[in-house]
Length: 358
Image (cartoon, rainbow, N blue to C red; front, top):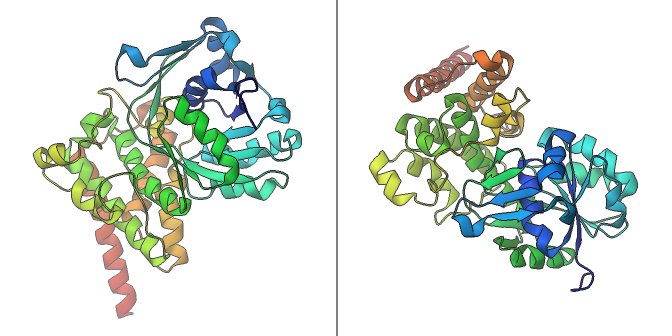
């Protein structure tokens, strides 16, 4: 598919923070097209694209605008070997409908969004090319008009597929940690477990590192994770997380006293001092969040299984309230948010007791 004289042709659909970071890293080793909105692409046209890892000046890469192809429409997929779909999960179907008419037969399409079934939505609309799911484990922040910084660490996972080998090779040459997995659904469920922290961080408004070192806020995450693990287990899924511990131990780790957590969870707290979640960025910019594919997905799965997930359900309600309130949204402290979730669980227990006695 590719050689030194014919670099891999990659189109990034939905070039936002993640798409621009990946595109910038891959561009020295591939022919990259970024498909996005003018407010993202125009600054790159003006000054070029800069990507950083937060690990020092040596890992800062600047690309002149002419080293990339920038487009507002997806016609470039006509010539692409690989299409990376990096839109928000809620935009998957609409974005896919836009690029499918131009998709070249045999191209590889990779869904890199949050949630459990974004790649399935792409697959439903694509019949001329293989579609696989992937997981991006790290956060990326837009720190300038055309500068994107990775603010945490992690290894990209892609579903095993023969057509993914050239992409994995290019990613590794670009310095990205990446590995194929034979159970991408387990990895996707693990990513949801980790991303349940996004809503807690966004409601607190604190930087990720500060939020993760707040014991009450971590307990809020642990409550949501416990509910999710019970639901996933009932659905027959054992989540995989890119950590040195089983997913089932995540709530226990999150509940540890902060000094112990700080020592044991070094990979968890290795984030920039000012790093935030994508959900926080959405609230700040007045955009819809992805709460419905995170805590919201746990609630929907629980209902289908005849179970309850009251803390996750309350988190969904609180994030939607924050979306509606905009700049006037409440900034939750750890003790207040924890008390709110505990009340939600107590209400659920009372209602269950009433139903059993009636």
